[in-house]
Each structure stands twice: as C-alpha cells, then as structure tokens.
Image 1 (cartoon, rainbow, N blue to C red):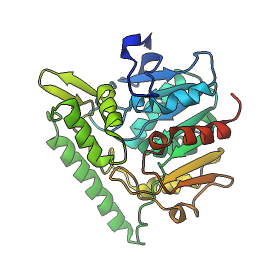
Image 2 (cartoon, rainbow, N blue to C red):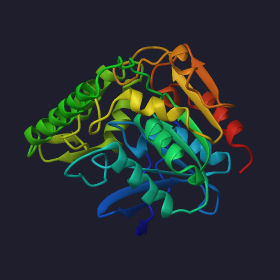
Image 3 (cartoon, rainbow, N blue to C red):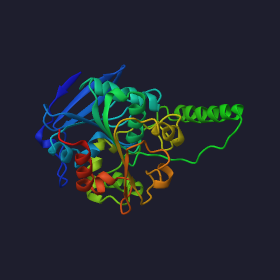
Length: 310
C-alpha cells in the first residue's frame, strides 16, 4: 500500500468542490485500487462507495461536507473505473471483496458506510454478509426493486441464469480491445448530460476533468469499455432486494423520485415490505438519481445527524 499527497494545483475550480487531500493505492487480491480521502487523517473513518460509471472524485462537493462534520471520508475507484485497474471479468462479489480490501487498509473495526446507486447496493451486500464490519449504513438511491420473477420450474431458473451468464460473457468477448470514444471536454460533458440532464453543464465539465484522461486525440472517460449498463457482471435487482431484509445494522435510505436513465426507478412502496426493522426512508420528490449532487447540503445534514458525533 502506497500513499501520496495531491498537489494544490489539482484542486478543482467548481464552486464548493475540493480535491481529495490524500491519494493512495491498495492491492485488492492482485488488483490495484485507487483510494482517496477527505478530512483529518486522525478523524474517525467513514467509507463511501460511488455509483456505476462514476468515480470517487464525483464526491468532491459532498465528501468535504461530511469531512467538515469531523469525519475522515474514504472512497475508492471501483475496479474498471477511474484510476483503478481494469479486470478480466467483473462481478458484484468481486467489487465487495475490493471494498473489504480498502476497509482492511483503514481499520478492522466496524465503521459507518455510505453508498450511492450501485455503490449503495454493494454496501447492502457487504452489510448483510459482514455485519461486524459495518456500524451504520447510508444508502443514497441505491435500493433497486425490479419486478419479482414468477414462480417457475427449477430447470427454467437454471436456463435463465445460463442465459444471463452467456449474454455477459459474449459482451465481454466482443469488448476485448475496444477503447472509449475521444472528445473535447464539452463533448464528453454533453454525452454525460444525456444521462444526467438535471446536473449543470459546469458540474459535468468538472466531472470530465476528474473522471477522464487527456490523450493525444482528446479526452476519454476512465472506464473500462467492457463495462455497460444493465449490470457489472451477472446481476438482477431482486438479488439485492432479498438481502435488504437481512441487514441488521442501523440504516437510512434515500430515494430520488424524478426518473433518470442512470436511476433505478424504485418507488417507496416497492421497498417498504423489505426495509429492515428500525430503518428510515427519506424520499426526495424534487430530485433525480444524484441526490447528493443536487442537494449536497440537505443530504449531508441528514447523514451527519444519522452518524452522530464522531
């Protein structure tokens, strides 16, 4: 595990955004994972997992607000994203193992955990599988609730699983050697804006500068071309939903009600039968999927109240 301090000239110019104060790398079972931190190095840690097709540095407005509350915020680029290594294959379980490697680099004690979108679903899996590593759980629009599968014969379930695996492996083979399309900062911001129409152009331009690299022929998103929407390896929403009921740590969830391409489309009534006892659900009627970017002050206040005094 190596550690370095980011230079002052890397601090972004977007209002309210602050680059991580520290950057290091963690070896996760042979894969190199980029880790970023905001806040005093001696402050109590809180871990946060970003969403799919995002980066740890997407948190450059939200994380400093949590750090200002007395916490050391630690996030990481998931495999295939940002400055972490690409992998031969991707799966949710592999992402959870990577997260545990980052946790191990900080502490073996239980810690508060936050996650947005895919990151929120991943942290649900981790909290259910390793409750001794999680003290509190914050899920920001990462509560998928797909249509329940009908009661079908076991042989049909096996066939459906086989179809899912075959489709994913075929895509992975076809993506071998592919590269992401280059463009200017404005072009990449415009592409991302089609999926995030509620986020300002200024924010999207900022995201390009921290989530893309500048090559000789233009900027490219730092995301493995093998990754695609619809799952990071074989996965279905109901697989995560079934785990939700088993979570035994204090938890709050947040839902943005305005539909977006990158969101889950989950409704409160989809979740209430599955929410763990004692958990609380905050519904944002006037927000899209990126609640913590649209409403960083409001979301950070809810989170800090839930986490309590560091």
